[in-house]
Image (cartoon, rainbow, N blue to C red; front, side):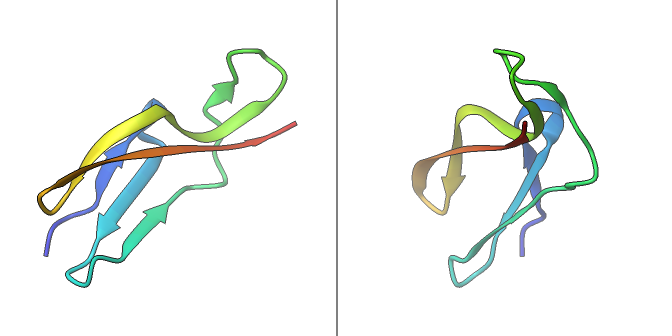
Length: 69
């Protein structure tokens, strides 16, 4: 099995894909990573756009933002 991989702004997202192809995303919701680009929200986690990741022999993209106002 492979280890979890950290991606995104401040490595705020961690993901793992098991042997069955199930992806698990882990986010520490107790931390803020700063304001959004507009300054209207505060980010908890961000992939910083569409992050390119490899799952098996496929190249896929993950876009995720977790924030509050």
